[in-house]
Image (cartoon, rainbow, N blue to C red; front, side, top):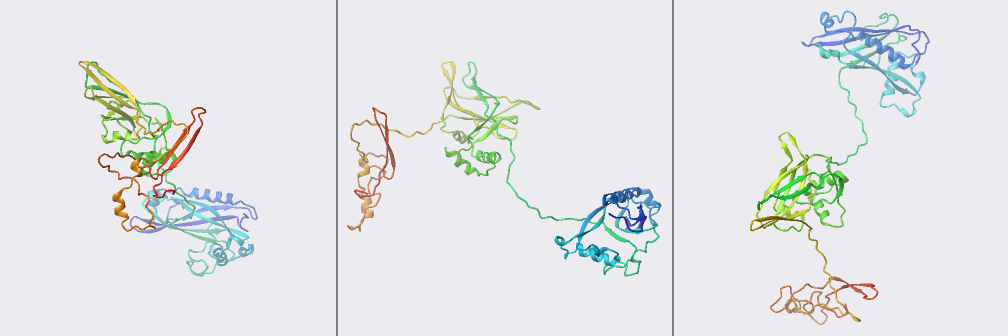
Length: 489
């Protein structure tokens, strides 16, 4: 930046308008400067900003006492309690000559054309620097006075020698002070600061995602079931935490478990599913739904399930509800990962147990294996029969029959008989062109006296596998029986 022509000293004359608690206004005048530069010297914008800001810091030394001592005339040494900072901003213009040797009125017109709505930044070739004086710290906030506004005049020459009266500035319509004449060659400026918020809105790209933050569910606990010596109606269940980390398919015991499993599945896979969808996924053996289980939090309690009917699946325990809760608490303010529970039972009765752990965030583990416990009392001889059981898995029935040369397959007799009541109800008006229906063969499901009942074969596919006894080679036949009523359908 080139220093102002024929200028050795610059001053910023500032006047603050303050309001006290009674609503009374008074003026405080302070001076920032001097800024002394050699004629025709070169000065960087950064150095210019540093010089101005250092001068502003020098006058920001007023106190409450200074303000109270002369509230009508301002601080006695031209000081202020506020802190101001000057920052530059580059504004472009399309002609370098537009701001050379211009009066204040002409210069402000060019300035407005640069920052106005008609400015076209894409075609601009030159620039103007706009200096903004920012109010960075309200020192009056701790006093009995409030800053209302501030006026700043930039004056050339000896301090105050060329300063026109406030309001005596020529300029375009709307500039306070009218059109009083001032030397057009005098470089001066007026800045008015208003104490108000400045909110800027920006349109920026945005996105959203649905997520949930949860801890991993714990591992199933270790369960030990032990009897008491000579006692036929009590069992001790001893529980402790497990260690490790692995993926496993979750098991539902209670109806409310599906909601928690849905949340855990979303947390671990970032895929949102509903509780009903979780139930459907777990009912499908081909679905790969799994959760990661690990003990990353202390265990808080153990949930014990018990039933006297042999369960076919873990959800059978949910019909009886939670049998007991074992707290892992040693004292009021001290807890342990181990716990125990004394269960009252009847002798010579089989009981089925499973237990799951809950951590401090109520995440539950998968259940333990199912234990079948029977405390036998044989005329005073008491002993425990304890074993784990496997859940019943439905298997397909496989029938084998030996043969030599020919293979003949046909439906059972009841599938070949015609239901007369069906004919009377549906074919009263049949003609010779009327084709029989596809369910004309087969007796009704409710058998009459002396008739055997069995499954229908119609519209079902059966796999027949022929295996050679000598070579062990196999041939599979997929056969579907169709009940069309036509000899060769």
